[in-house]
Image 1 (tube, rainbow, N blue to C red):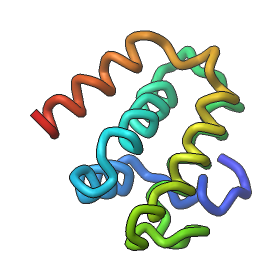
Image 2 (image 1 turned 135 degrees about the horizontal axis):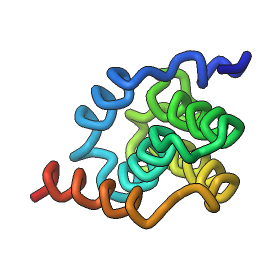
Image 3 (image 1 turned 120 degrees about the vertical axis):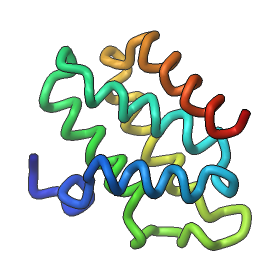
Image 4 (image 1 turned 45 degrees about the vertical axis):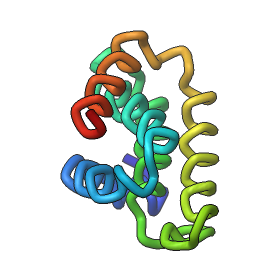
Length: 112
C-alpha cells in the first residue's frame, strides 16, 4: 500500500461495516460505485496502481474524517460520491461488467 492516509485506513471489515450502516441513508447512488470499486480491487487482474487508487477512495468513504461530514443533511455523502467517481474514472478500464453485476446483486440483497 502507500502513504495515503485513507488507503491505510481501508480494511475489508471496515468497508462492509460502513456500507451496511449507511445503506439506507446513503442509498444506491453512493453504494453502487463503492461496491463496483471494491469488487474491482479484489480482482487479481486489476493492477496494483489501480488497487491503490481504489483503496484510497474506499478509505475516504469509510473514514469518519470527511470534507463534508456524512451526517450533514442532503450534502453529507456528496464528497464521498465525488471521490468514488474520480477513482472510478481513473480505473475505468479495470471495472469489468462482472464487477457491476456483483455490485447490483449486493444492492438488491440489501434493498430488496
